Image (cartoon, rainbow, N blue to C red; front, side, top):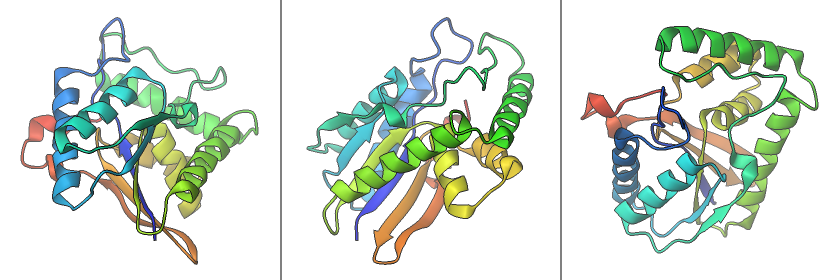
Length: 210
């Protein structure tokens, strides 16, 4: 049975002029999760990510740290949500708690609207990207999809049948470089773990959410 790990990207540059750049912590997180995957016995997995810089740099950091002989495929369906009906609050320097509250409110309203050209379309696209990636893996193979918190939340909420509030709760706590593992078998897909960040516990400075 193939297994897919959804890996949220490393910490980006909150408050900087260009958010879509890994911070020094983000680079370190990428190396840590790469070594953790190697420790778990993952060997040269197939790797896919969106085309955001923070996603691609995280993927490269994982591959380099683990020494995987893996190439990287780019699929923009793994990108974070970016939709006019879901306006993202600015990431300019400010109170992170205020930013989180505004993000939660915007996301809950967007999910609750459940428009095909909005949240539902984003969720459908993320789920299709996962199914296409899993179908391309051979039996017993492992795939890494380096993505963003919104995509992880969209997939988990679909599998678990979560409402808008449940989706927001998942999105709020998905940590940078956390691992969400999904196994595919004859009875479909099953979540084995969600937001596993045990590999970051030895250094609390590496446990970040933005």
